[in-house]
Structure formats: structure tokens, C-alpha cells
Length: 217
Image (cartoon, rainbow, N blue to C red; front, side, top):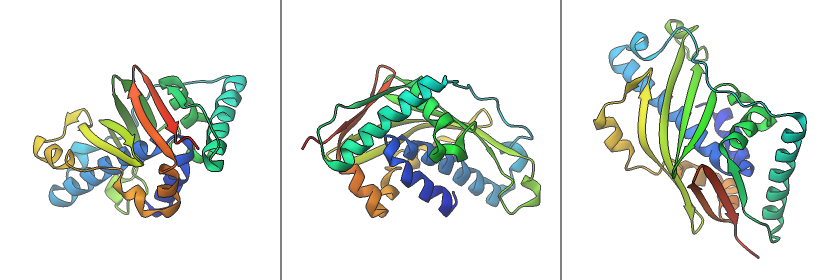
């Protein structure tokens, strides 16, 4: 990920912290691909010449406005330390935010999130033209990953469950190492993001919904 992407992602904490999951997903895939490319020049094996068609969510103007207002009201209450009900978003609403939020414009049509049980699965299709390698021009990194995400006592934890690139499962040796990591730990390097996370009490994924509860004043 570029520094601009990281800064953008940190700003998106106001959208419920799941932007972290999106950026972790993109970062994992590009890191894994970069490693494989560096050691074995596997561009053809791990990239494709066309993007994958991801599911799309289309919101009406009224739905998009209501969703943005609900998220904004939650953000404002958390910022001000006033009482607020938990923010509850289903899969359609999460992807609606990605599709309609200016802060997430860079990943529009490139990421789709699915909620299953207590896990979130992200599918991505990333153009690789920004990589300084002529061989990657016009190619795409297509893959998906499944995460468990939770927040308790001000600590956001995102752990990898599975990862595949171009429909191929990533070797278990790589997964075993990555499953030990809290993939959201870098978020705490940004003081603003860390302070905002500490204003939250709980993040949970359950029954196809993500619930973000603020700390009560």
C-alpha cells in the first residue's frame, strides 16, 4: 500500500473501523504477491489480464443519504462523547458505504465484503499499473481473504483465516505465520486513529451484521 492509501484508510475509521479490514486485505495480497514475484517472478501465475467482476450494491439516492446520515450521526456522537446506540450495518450497507462514500472512492468497484457468521470475507480486484514494473502493466491482482475481527477494551484485533490469489489457496506455511499476527496493529501508530478506537467499546460480527458500540459517557 502507498502512504496515501494508508492515510486514507486511517481517515475512514469514522466508517466503523472495517476500512482497516479492507486495507489489510489489499496489503496482504500485494505483500504476498510482491514476495512471490521477487523470489520467483510469478507474475503470470498470480496475476491476470482482466479484473474479476465483483458483486455490486446499488443504493437509491434516499437509501444512500439515510445511510450516510446514520454513520455521520454515530461518528459525531462518538467524537463528542455523547450517548449513542450501537451502529449496526448489514452486508448490503457495508458495501453501499464503499460504493457511495467519497472517503472510500479509491476502492470503489475493487472490493466487496461478505459477512458470514462471525467472519468477514473480502474479495478484491486490484490494478497493478502503479507497480514500477513494465511486466505488470495492464494486469490485475484478483483474490480473497477471510478474517475474524473484534474490538474489546479499546484493542482492535483482525486475524487472517484464509487467503487465496487467482483462485489458488496460499500455501499453509505462509498462512500459519500470518494467522499469528494482529493485522490491525499498525493502526495504533496513528495517534488520531488510536484515540478514536479507544472511544469504542465493542466491534462484533454476528448473524450477517457488524455491530460497533461506543463507550458510554
